[in-house]
Structures are given as structure tokens and as C-alpha cells.
Length: 567
Image (cartoon, rainbow, N blue to C red; front, side, top):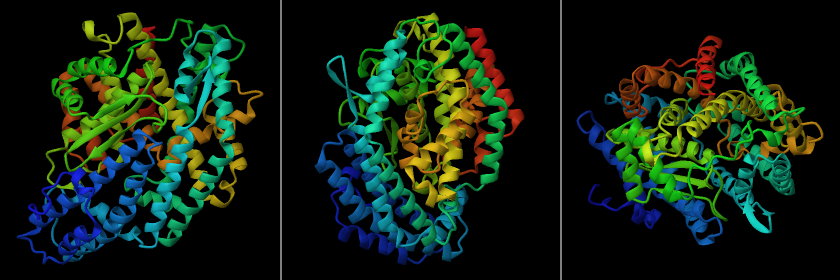
């Protein structure tokens, strides 16, 4: 098979299903014995890696320019003509392995457990629904990606407009905030329609697979073997008990420093001492160069990996019109590489996003030595430890000599902002996301109503995010959920970030005690990929997988004490 599949993933994207189907058929029919199992797994991994990487590269191409209808057409054609048939054919291969009753090679046990769970979920009638789901997600991206506003006579993206929320002039911030919200309100009906269609489609997928609701279906799809929805509810309670009061203390400090009667939504990004916004870089090239110096200080091997990504064109960091919103890291499993996609406009949040996505990219490169494609699937609960730990580890070095982002005082200011945001976003904000989705996917008939979604979201938001005055802004508050891409593109995700922040703080704590040893343990854990359970991955990184009040209290205390020392 190696001779037939010597192509790159880019070349493979031009193959037809008629060329690929016989290869998958042969894998499903080849007699399996202990003596040839590893060779068979290698052939299967080779083919699956090509299919996944070709899809990922086409998706990246479409996201880099959402106005490129040809790129979007190529991506959808591949998904419909190759990817979905490959998923169906892959089920025959999975069943062939499961029915063989052969003992899995060492390091393949957790992958086999995931396969059994996926095999139970697979229903061929859901393939068309998966394609339609991707179309609806792309429609959401098009709507949001095309949102622009006029600022000082120039057309700007909403992401660029968001940067104005750091302006020391409160009237400027309020104007930018209201302008952004108004543009979002203009698309409310279209986004409500996309949401309603997605909710109905996902519920039908769950029914097709024999589940009572999409939450139960998605739980198994996300391979959440170590915790339950009830555990998530208990974690939300812990967040309300520990992290929400910490968030309130942060907001009270902002209010005192700003000298305002109440903290409004446009007061959350500005420096509380009304200092000018931090300007860490001028363009994407400078962002790359300075980030490279920071990663070199965290760990020389990680620094070398980032330089490799720069040389090989695996970064697209600048913001521009018609580029899909937000930022993410794509995995190229055949090349064992990663691609970082961002929308940087020159502010501190861009720096943190790059540190975050680089953590994911380093994870991909660290597990490159694993032999099988199926070992590259890392549980999200640990996947995000890699990214969040990198934020904390790298933030220490924002003053990296002459090549760094900041002088010492500004670096301290940036770190304080990051830690405060980590407390607020990683726990109260994530708890709000989780509570909203828990409601929506267990009561989909009601949740299809966009107006009701806005009402429920407002109730949840005010429960977990107190300390901000939304009076007179009900219309705006009721649509803020539509700007959260996870609700549309990554359903029921979010709570993993809360778990992962706890793990990341523990990794950071270890590095504060011994930098080299702490980072070495993290890299060792990253290299395990998906070959171990979530608790074992945390243990390898020097952390404990937990979501109890005491662990959360210890983490918040470390973060608050660090903030106090930096102020």
C-alpha cells in the first residue's frame, strides 16, 4: 500500500473515490492475525491520515478566504465525495478489527475503546446530516466573517472594532461596543435560523443513533468516559462558590480604579488605570519573531518547533476581510504537523491567542513519534492543558531581552490581565456556556426559539458573571450568545477548558518550583498523545484531574497571589 499512497495530502485531495474505495475495501477484507496486525494498522493509519489531512488542508484554504467560492466548493466536494464515503467505509474496517478479537498492541488500548464507542454511534443515515451540519456551520462563519462596521470613515472588521474597547476614553469604548452590537443585531434572525436548524439536525442525529437527546449522543461522541453531566453540574457549583467571587473581586477593582458608578460591558478590556492600550507588535511578522524568542526561553526544543512552522508556512496570523473569524490550530496528521490560523490586529489578546494555539501545535509535533493515526486523538480535557499551560509558562518571558514584547512594567500589566481573564473566562464564562448548552440540548424544542435562547442566556450569564451592569442593554445581552462560535461549530464543548485550566495551573505551579523539570513533565505527557486516559495524562504532566472545590480554591489562590505581587 505504501507504493500506492506515496502522494502528499495535497495531491491526495485530487484522488477520486473510485481510486480510494478499493484500498479501504482491501483493509476491511484482509485476513487479520496477530502476526500481521501491526502492519495492517500501519496501512490503515497511512490511509486515514491522508484522508484527514486532505480535508483539513481544504478547510484551511476555505477559511483563509471565505469569498473564494471555488475553495469552498472544493472543500464541500471533498467532504461529500470522499470524506463521508470514507467514514462509512472506515466503519467496515473498524468492525473488522473489533470482530477479530485480537489483543491491541501496547499503546493502542485507549484508541480501541474509542473505536468501540464510535462504532455504537455510527449510523449511515447520519452521514448526510453531518454534511448538512458542516454547511450550516460554514453559513455561520460566512455571516460572522462578513460582519464589518464603519469607524472613522473606514470599513473595519468587528475584531478590529473590538480593539477599540481598550481605548482609555470611555465614550470611544461605548461607541465601539454599541456599533459592534448593532452589527450583530442586524444578523440576529439569520443566526437564529442557523441555530434552530443545527439544533433540530443534531437532535435527529441522536435519535437516529438511539439516544434520547443530543447531549447523551455527544457525550459518547466526545469520549467522555471519566465524568458525567452530573459531574459538570457539580463543577459549575464549585465555580459559583469559588471562581465567581474571585471574578467579582476583579470587577470591583476595575470599578474602583476607573472611578465609575458601575462597571459597564465596554469597561472590561480597558486598562483600569486608563493607560494607553498595550501595543506588543505592529504586524504579523513581528508577532512571529517575538513569539519565537519567548518560546525559546520556555524550552529550546519548543522554540525550534515554532521556527520550523515559520519556515514551512504553517502560520496565517493576520486579520483581513473575508477571512473566517477567530483562531484555531489545524492538525495535519499525515505530515505530523500543525497549522495556526488567527486574526491578529496588534493587541495583547493576539499574543495570548498565539501562545494558546502554539501549545496545541507543540502537542501535535511532540506526539509525532506515535506510530498510528488513531493514537493522535487526544481527549479535549487534556488537549486544552497543552494550550492553557503554554499561556502561563510563556507569559513569564514576555520581556525576553531586546526581542521581547514589552518592558518589565508592561509585561507585568499584560500578565495581570491574562490571569484575571483566565479566572473569569476559564471558569465563570465556561460555566455559563456549559449551563446554556446543557439546557439547549436537553430541551431542543424550546431552545430552537431564538428569543427564548436569549432569555435563558441572560439569566445564566448574570448568575455566573455578576459585577457588570447591563441595565438598559437587554437586547444586546440577549444576542451575545450568538457570537460564541463553539455553540455553532463545536457543540457541547467548553467545559473541557474549565477542567484544563485547573490542570494548566498545576503545570505552571510545578514550573514555578522547577522550570526545566515542570516543562519536561509536560512535554512527556504531550508525547503520549491519546494513548492514556485523562487522569493518567494529567498525572504524567504532574497534575491531578479534578473539579472539586478544594482544587479550584488552590488554583484561584495561586493566581490571585501572583496578581497581587505583579500590581
